[in-house]
Length: 94
Image (cartoon, rainbow, N blue to C red):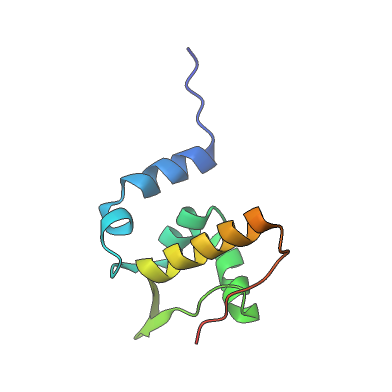
């Protein structure tokens, strides 16, 4: 058996094993973790934040973090939009 796991599957496996992501909704997630969780590159997350397609992060000094609950809520919204065929709606953070 040839075990050639794709990078996306490896990222998903690491994220699924991250207890902060799966069990603590108040966990603060870094940009690389968020990018892995939603399956894109960090630059894409930055662009989506700048254009209002992704929730605005919390600033901690020079760092940025997202609450796990905020990211999970965004992913659920995107899944609902995708399954309803409503098109590409966005969630703007308040």
